[in-house]
Image 1 (cartoon, one colour):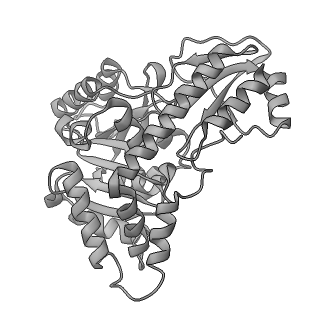
Image 2 (image 1 turned 90 degrees about the horizontal axis):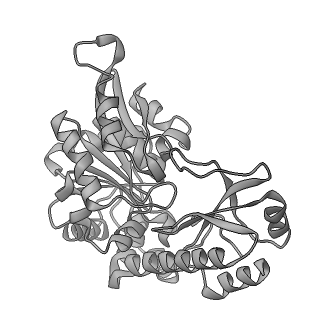
Length: 349
């Protein structure tokens, strides 16, 4: 029973077939093939406007290059205290920007508090050169703890960004899961709410290796071509990334995968609620479930080859642990089955 990460899941069969279909023959390199162009057009259709799309290998690359694209001298970017860019990207944003800083903003259950963001921005007044200058705001959708910003919450953050002339970035490593949870459209969850650049993730949702930085205004995208090349993320055989996205979008596979993962998380949450020996830390909105259990219970499950990870209690959770308890993360994916969750429930008794 593997609930360690959606990164542990393999590729969906349709993705694998698309890759195999591209393994023979020739195609123009460096993003100039017909398939690359077709996928770029598909992105434009999804977002209901012309967008600029830059394929990269990892979500970290998409995030770090987005920050490099938005960087200013002495730049300061604002993200939630537990955001991936602040905690799990090994300094990549700071490295690719040449020294910009990530400033933490608190907020309950993984979501930045709009008032806290306003206060954080005011820590860097324009006339005070020693502090540096605000350069961007980044929100994670879905968040690192399985919650989702509502459209109104995105709009509230975007309003603050507009008031301070700051671009809004969205880390969408689990973009499809958030979209499925809200039942909305890519346009409504991004540029119509004020998002200017998106890290579009597909690897966690059934692709082998397919991520992209999507700039909502192509007229501003010029420097990203050079930034991506300098960061060594310009694929020569980029048709293999395009092939994954082509299959991913066909017949709404990406949304079907995300809905399934979310449904499995809801099923897993119900299992945790009804079981003895552990409790749900908060309700999931996407495909991550967080449970509190005794360490001895967790160790017993791991001995039975149930895979999951211990987790640090997030900022503003309001949840308290007993001395012998710990928080654990369980992640579902397109490959998770109901039977797998039911077997887990049987183990819990």
